[in-house]
Length: 182
Ligand SMILES: [Zn+2]
Image (cartoon, rainbow, N blue to C red):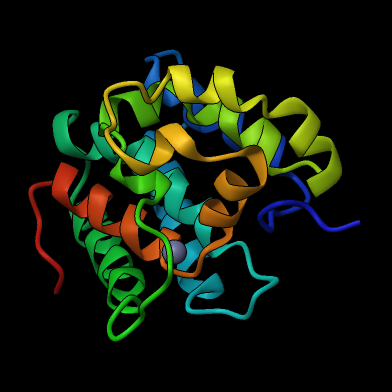
């Protein structure tokens, strides 16, 4: 059964590595973690529907604080910005019927909740709908006005699955890095 968003087989281990790094207890090579994520995103993007473009984009968003503030080695930031720009440009000319997408939430809130959200997004749709009680999810987004407050569980999942969501998160990551689309 397919998952809400495509994820790689070892996604759980990858995600805990990102989360450890974000919380400062990552034992391995941090820059290599960023480069690996950027390369995986570069391989996946623009990609077909089954490629985990959104997953790796969310990875670079989770790693953005390290890139922005920890003084990464030469070339690391450029590599991240180049691939994020490619993903962000994929939104050119796209339209959709959604008034709101998850990338419009406050980036610090997104970073805080991404590990929990990815648990839901990496599960089969039916199970995700059971796990994703809209009320619980929307509590986290209470400062977001308008559409999200009225969205049902399937509505929220549809917005995560929208082809504009990965480019939107790529723009959010670029913003975080103080970079513009190249
Ligand atoms: Zn949309």
